[in-house]
Length: 522
Image 1 (tube, helix red, strand yellow):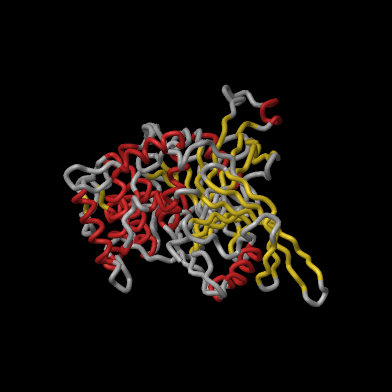
Image 2 (image 1 turned 90 degrees about the horizontal axis):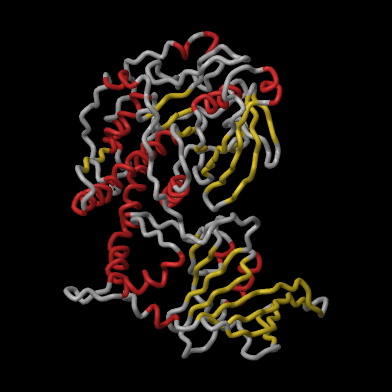
């Protein structure tokens, strides 16, 4: 059997609405930050000399240096441990407001408190005269690092967003994890309204993606307040986008750096007004890691010098304990490497044919196509990453299916990529697919060879494979592929009948071997 692969597209429970664009990029990168009324405070903060890796420009040589540094650290039992231990643990900066008796109940932990010089100060309103919230301005007020809202801070959280005109919230933790409350659900259910003090939040819509959930709210003043209030411009409202990242396990890091890169790309495609509110539970570990990654990616994009250790140090000077664990520092490097290796290859759907023609062209000097160059780069550099997409010890693995799960744009494990089953394994192959709900098959094989062994040869023919009866219901030539519709029945010998009929769709693309011949095989 020649080279063959099969892809099963999992049945999706809910599909996000999306335009005809592949991982849409932003043409409007981060705008200027809001004027900082306390900018003079930051002038007094002196950066410490970094002893970590320092990239002085976004060049190919600096990228190679970073890749080599990461590859070297990955050989250690605890990568970047020495670098992490050099970070300042405690800083002699006051946090007087956070320790006042009237404010202590608003702190989730008594050891994670906002420094006075960078804390967010709320304006008093008709309900509260307190200016305290456990949150800090970061990076010249481009971000607000905030603890997750608690029962006693729900109103303050929305008061902060209203007063600072924020329109983007990045949530890095679920409300409940392993049965423990991590933060309150500070938004109403979809198509509902809820009031928080003088603020009303309306939940417009929710869109589900494989790695994140995108919720849209409108924020306005409550009707009761509008009837009695006398302040100007209080009848305004605007849309707030909340991006909840679903792939960050508690006390751990995301499994793949690609997840956070795709998440950041999605956020940057929006019209962001600063500051951006970023929170997890305590507002330091995941929050600090995310903000650090975002800052460094922007610096790489603009060609600025990047220094991971200096960036984390600066964050810790603005909010204590930012980037809380060594593995979070390791993840920052993983994301930078992933960004270098994958680059920004997003392409409009309409431009795919033109781009494919371009990368097939051969370089006269090297006699190698751009496509082959790109493929070789992936092969040479893939060893930097740990490959853990493989099937887990479940039903699929027990049947020795040599395959991997791949997340799709709208749900987790949307695709299963594996080999066409060999003789003797077809029954297990079918059982796994049906049990897992993979009912669409895309098979790539040499058109000069035999079709897959699970596919009947003639229309209305049925073949028996173990306890399954497979019938070829229809065949349609789509021009670029052959579309076959199958019916799979479970045959029960005891009842002498058939039951549990399932429909399976098989797609057999033409010209696959012609395409793969353009790619060097190793």
